[in-house]
Length: 227
Image (spheres, rainbow, N blue to C red):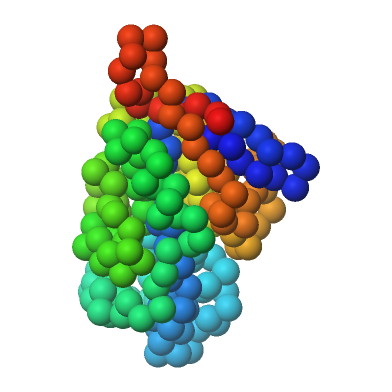
């Protein structure tokens, strides 16, 4: 996989690619800001602070942090989820995302998202993107990002070691999760925050290219090689 960076194009070899969803494959910014804005207005909360800290985090964790004392976190999270599922206007794929997903062998790609499976299906469909066969959604982990559980689980499901995988993420919490999992991580878009050492950054996938090479036995590999 060739990754264009400000200094030069980097060629990264891997056997599996793990993608976050919101902000990484799918631009759902307008919907997310609208829903959390309504939540903030209801309880007189600072929407800027909610948006600053909630990106890439499971909704339940954000509700738990900001809801008033004594609030029913489970009920509030379910309510927010129900609202998000019916709001799809303006959801689009990031530039080059569809082409990149199509270029990677299906057995070498996974989605790792803080959304639940229903919301993930809705947003991927709204953006015109095919859902990978392997998807680790909120209900499949006990600890959400920035914990590495989701990325480690996805690598295991694809049968690869963390060192043989590659993560694409857009939010500080997700980037931290990828790094903590011991997986090479590429930050995408403008909302990544300060990047840890070794994390590359790209604006989108417009200039990312993939070359898939057969293994020694001539089989289609579960992985990618640089062009």
